Image 1 (cartoon, each protein chain N blue to C red):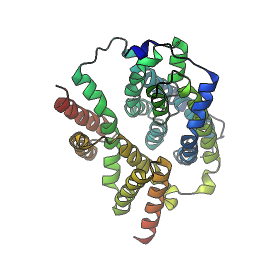
Image 2: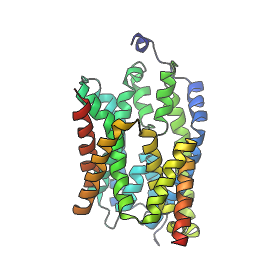
Image 3: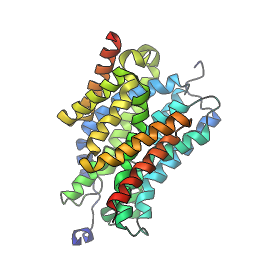
Length: 233
Length: 105
């Protein structure tokens, strides 16, 4: 723990190293951005709306969910609640950075957290866990990934008509494949089987009975609380 | 669809700004709240189980309401992730698998 007491630096070279490490993630976000641009166009978002959303929200899962329930008029409340639910996992990632980010200037920490995503958060955490004292990895990788994300959203939206129906190419399956890949990374062993089964069964049941996105809350709470009850004593 | 590409509907603007605020609140909120939150073992265990539970709650109904191509495609993506360790490879494999299966089934 005494390691946490050493100051954390925030340098340009740290940011550049983060951007370099994020190269595969940035490339993969181009594929998502293109698909998101197409999906946003089909849901009726204008080019400006899609690119502003990608810039300010910077979260593929939340944005895909939002355009999935987008309509006319826009269901504002549902979109915001869905964003909170889908992004609630960021609470945990942010919490995990506390021991190191509390050693940086406050505006560096809170500025960096804007750029936190599923894929660059592990880069920052791994850097700290290797014993590096460089806090700019998250922001450096984040700025790079945000740029490719926004640019590819715009291109996807503009080329939407040319790309055509994503179903033909299986592109509507992207988000399912992505979640499957994330789950493989999140799998820590047999201990996850029970909470995940509880979550999946609850989500499928609630999804069949209740319209909207409540199945995500219901499934996530049921699964995580089941895990906490088993492990938390 | 015929709208000016640079126009922003006022309701869409409110929704997008709301999404942005919600997203930042989640990103910064966990870090912020840890100032006061004493971690009990049960809270820690709960937090640790949330990510997997959230993702599988999103995924399970999508797969359940899809057909056999989607089910097999999900398995292909998971196996590709396990083998390659790259999420892009997993996604490409999953998409290619689903597209091929839909074409023949």
